[in-house]
Length: 263
Image (cartoon, rainbow, N blue to C red; front, side, top):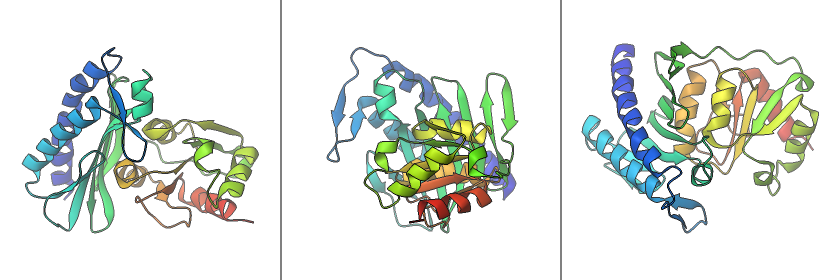
């Protein structure tokens, strides 16, 4: 199983990295057009072009299997597992010339995230993991595994990243979220997949998000599992479905969930 997952992951990584040139062709381009979808979130021609290309790749590697993508929805026959595609995670950042966006592909089997890829074309970094294949990053200096998360002794000692405080203000966790960011050692709003890169590198102890979907979280759930971390919802249950998520050391995730749900 591990060897087959390693081969599949390697093939997908090559294909995702080939999308870099396509993505960078649009990045910083004066002609880039940004429009709004029905939910008012932004979308560009780059989002659509990259998702079309990745869907073609997955259809070749896993013919007929279900694909769930941000731009073109659900396709393929009903299967035990499915693929997720987020062609540009961080379209807002992408459209404003910030380098923090990524291209993401994930795999779910029997309700578990079993494969995750996240490539940062503007940074030249790829994160990858699969069942039996430890989470690691690959850059210009080669590949290295992500270290397991450090135990967190107290909230006052913790570094917490989140996707932006405004996403939490209208939720039932608003009060608990405020306690977290006011009581921790350091909090920063690093949105989209970028915050997870730094958390997986050990620079942050937890990442919180609200307003996310499976194509955002399936790859990150696989990366969390492959590095000894837990990605859960705000009830503490392992989850990649959104809209609420917490990632970190399993014990610290449980601590965060307790604070989020306290009155």
